[in-house]
Length: 419
Image (cartoon, rainbow, N blue to C red; front, side, top):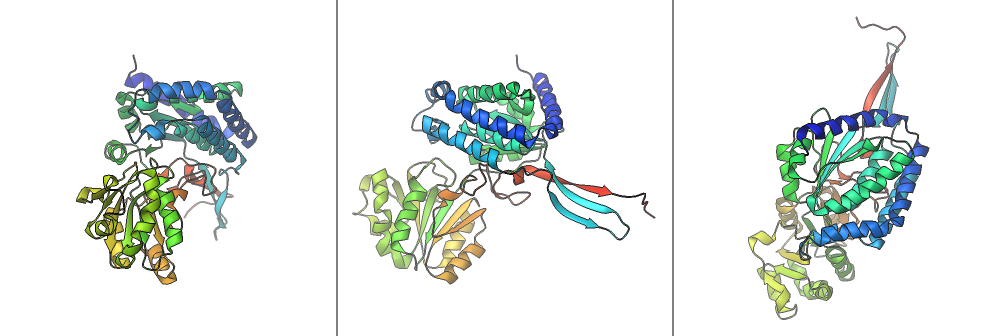
């Protein structure tokens, strides 16, 4: 029987593993990451068999289904990301600041691991690989609390990681996969002294629950209520492709488009801007003005009149709302009201409008004339990410290796004492 006591015993083992992590050389770490990537590809069939057990328990219409699903191609991509992390330089031991005081004391501000990083996540088995890679490379041990909906997948993945760690005589508690039950969640949230920071990845509901109940410090990541504003000066050709890509590339991810904001002077172009969405059967929830322009040209089965709840909603599906505005300021007001401060974009050719938008929008990633689908650690050249931070303390945007470190001051003296 799993109890809070034996979970705490596991957490104590994780702490010990984290304290010894500094003994690992970058060469050892890179070798482990590359071998985990190789073994993941080799064990693709076993991973997919476990993943299918999870998929069989979930409704295929559930927005989380696509996030849960692994394929041979996705495993290849995960392995490639791990190899990319191995190629990156270590974020540890970097001199962030250095100075000598008048009294002769030499000060160095050095990057160091956080220690033990806890991740609570829902139906995202790829997170198990990503978190391990980034934590190991940054000298951190990790405690993972996946949801029951991905239990079989996570167990299969963790076993591959532990096999490689054991082969290299590295403490297997560098990764501890907690039991999937809810009881373990409460233990994790209250694990002060065992876990240094918790990062939730999942729905807004999960993030809110973790923030409201955790005694351990939390970095909020994940939920994306994403807008793209098509300005009066927007280029139609660019707009069509950007909107289509941002909405349909992968609807279950947090950087997918949820609301198209369009300037009133460009409503005549709305049919062209949305026409390609029909090929993916995207349901549109249009405000009164935009509905009038789409009625009769966008399929009636997929066109609806927007209600209040359709704004400020992360759809995670082939659904999108449309809001009509008369000015940049009105667009900015709408975004400020409904944004989750994840990713926001503008399509415009007027440079003054672009710069005003880029300065004014409060979000972790703000785009001009490109798709919000790029909010991703790998796409930003970081190798992979542990999540997209939507807050302002410590880290913001994709959290990769540098964001998984803290720092300490090292002070060297020669007998000085303070008067």
